[in-house]
Image 1 (cartoon, helix red, strand yellow):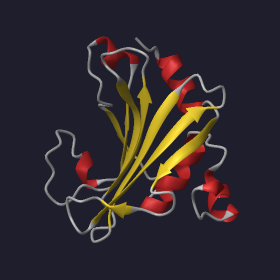
Image 2 (cartoon, one colour):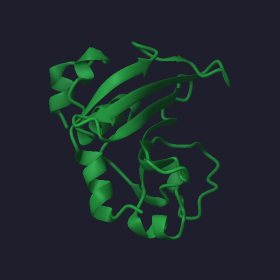
Image 3 (cartoon, one colour):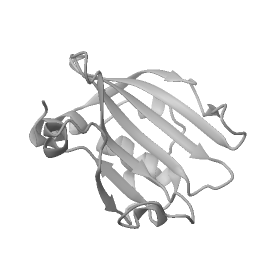
Length: 163
């Protein structure tokens, strides 16, 4: 399975978006009139590694969102591994053991979790790096080193340079 160094490398390697659904903006999720989604097919510049980046947000409760990256493995099981996920606040009812639902937070996968055959990123840390979907998205795309964001997002240079 993946080591912590390989996980870090997969997250930080230069990538490009090869397809977006929808091409621009977000589309209704289908579960609720308030939820919107977007999926991005992404690959490393070497085209050796492939990923799916997903964006989910609630237009009514704007602090509720999720932005994540799935690594598409070359094995049957697991066929993908969630490497990293930036989340907003989940709401007033906190079902988490550590109370992270009430804060902006980041989920990460680790070598230790994978060695236990846990494929969900259960290492969770609260963050003050972002406090909105737009801030989280800008930070996330920069962390992933996606080189062609301007082809798929209407983001000004100023917003990108903030992070």
